[in-house]
Length: 162
Length: 162
DNA sequence: TTGGCTGAGTCTGTCAAGCGGACTTATCCT
DNA sequence: AGGATAAGTCCGCTTGACAGACTCAGCCAA
Image: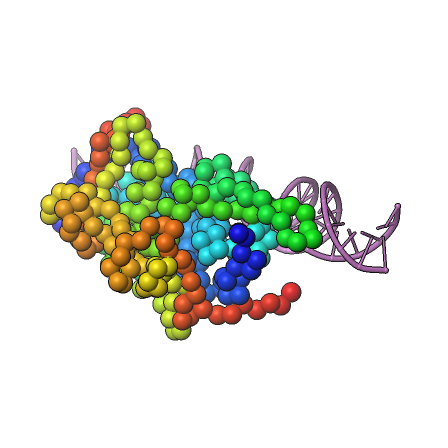
């Protein structure tokens, strides 16, 4: 029943895609910032208040997301005020939609609220709800137990130095 | 061009599904732990070494994930050793596959490695690579710019107390 | 032209959390 | 009895989060 030595034990974790992605996203606040941008809130002060982030942390996270290419600063000007900047998702940022939608979907299933889901991703054109689906190249849509995460071409054998 | 007041500004963030999901997953280490479990590494010491997590932190994270219902402890016994416990994903945990796969997919696209992807999710039956797809109820598969995250039935108006 | 307002920060001191390394416990083997 | 091992617990240091005060630039109204 118990695999004596799981296959993965022979492979290094140092270049794992999940780790590398988590170095960018893997922070309590980063997802809150992204959520705000995805729902259309783009200004420093609005993001800060809605997400409840300490200013300093927000400053730092926005800078990091810009540096990583997920956001860009965009000048705007309200009538009778000076020019300021808002933050917008780049294509790389927008391509996190599947991650966000998958998280919403999981949360709605396992942490449901009485009143129903508070936020819903929808297709702009038809107004229908959007969800994520797992699909293999052959067109099957496997359930969770039919999937395995295996080493790929870039996998490195693990060093077993003490 | 700039939305003067984004629609989302009128809605509360307090019960947001992403926040609630992030209260469980939103931690630098939790995803590393989940990755190990998804690739089949289940034992405390193996997880600790591979993920490079401080023992204390691992202890705490495993306990939290168990309490939240994503993992369960499962007794095992190696020949000539006493009984110990390993950690396995529950159905709720396995249902995070779409989140993990979406993250791998994003990482492979935007943080590619020379040697190709180090880990690949595949369909056990046919061996083909699995990816996530966004799909609406009407069967369309919208791109990132065709999606909007809108308030749903459970959305609460925001309190504007200072 | 002075003074106030506002958005977007920076500065500062406190306190919790992460961290590496040493120590502990329980069981099995020789 | 002595040693090995998995899974922790304990300890002190350092890093980061946090709240709250302060700054800065440009615009407005008086």
